Length: 168
Image (cartoon, rainbow, N blue to C red; front, side, top):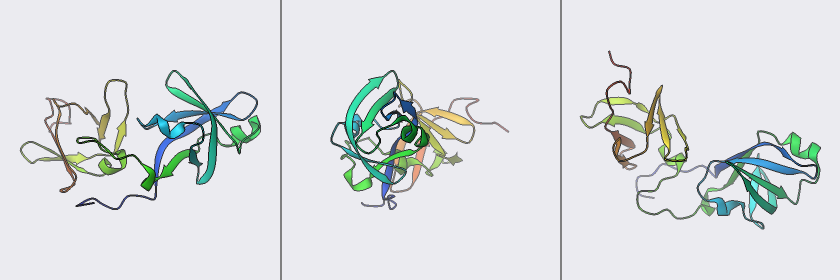
């Protein structure tokens, strides 16, 4: 844990975006690259309540799941917009140069000359690469722009292009 800030007890891995079918299925917008978290038999939390996944299907950018504890459409509809989380200690070990979103949110962002550009406010996944939100700037998480992620010093060093940030 050297230099890392304390991690929350649960990590968000998705959000319920609606019901699926008449038997209580749920449409999930995932916010993780670890889709094995949704395999049948896995326990996830819907707004803090543990549920057991019994079925998994994928459809375009969404996952469709069924859970043992939700058996009808009305119950599924009531869960719309629920956060899907897992305990932080159950998250997989990352490879070098991989980071959890929770580790990056709030980090200071500087350019290669040390000028402060803002803080990482959010991270959006996209098919090609993730995107850091820094104020109104959107910075692709690719080597051309993100030069260093330094968790010990709580900062991200980037190489912005002209116009990426509001210029005075």
